[in-house]
Image (cartoon, rainbow, N blue to C red; front, side, top):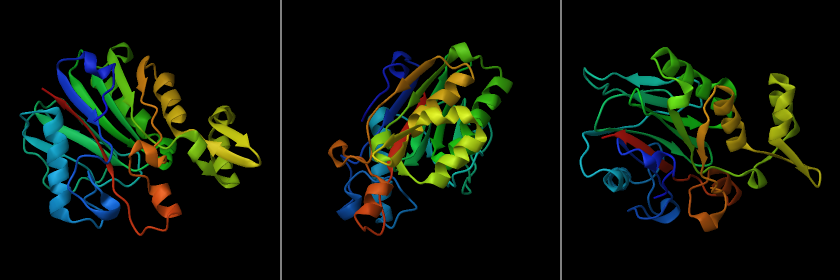
Length: 253
């Protein structure tokens, strides 16, 4: 488990970014696969999720995850009332509710965990390039501001994701981002006629542009097998038919 130094300063919350170590799954899913949508044994996945939750909290009521679709939609879990038992189709969770662990699953995409130290509200965001491009980070922050949050009270942690050196992209990909804004050129680097994209830098600047100053970047490349993370791109390059998902979670005590 990896922790953000900035988020770890707050005793009111528990959090963790997990790699693939310490779980029950076998084969290409070895071993802490949190992907319920993967082809892995479902009992093992559920055990893995419990292992991760127990790592951050001795006592919790429930783990809430999403059916992630690379969108800009979020789900707000209210402080009171029943918890939605249906599949939640979204790419970010927000809550003030205590003892409820919220999380996202990634396999190269960016997991973002946010805490407002004054309003006591947390968020977990799944930001792949599509969701980030569509403004999932901005949508979450706009909601937080609507709820009374101020940027000075927000702390964000950008978790492990694919690094720029591992993220080669095609020409049309870059063109899409430059159409959004010419300033996006700073997120691309050309090396020997190949172009690479920095996803975590793109997300970082989105947070920064909305006034968030306390930002942690956990710079671990999920594509690099030595770092022991699940990676969709690496699995595709290896010709594997599926891949596991890394778990990132946060909870208010």
